[in-house]
Image (tube, rainbow, N blue to C red; front, side, top):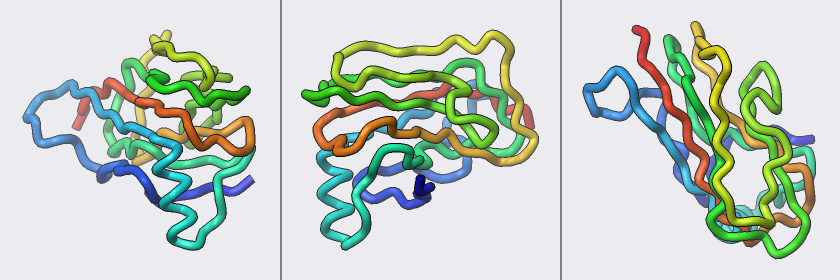
Length: 145
């Protein structure tokens, strides 16, 4: 397992709230695995493999996550799954999201999760050779600062 902090092939943004001047915001990132694979190859770095984690959305200190999810907009074309979690667990929000089926995979958090310190939303890949799927990962966050 390798934990990647780079953002080759996608834009994960910064560890700050979007400039919306609103206490509750939705942050999202689109993960186009074809673009990610191409960018990683062009940079001469390792391809993503099973059990690898990838930081996808930074959570600023003082955040409370109300909901999170992953919407598959383009299917992989073969068996592939991923998990959505944070620094405390790989499946805090979602487990075994089917990347070979176009679907919305939202998770309503039973109890809001407060982050006193900055953290990240991570995906963990459960299979090798994910290179076609497109997934929109999102989180609804309250700024409690």
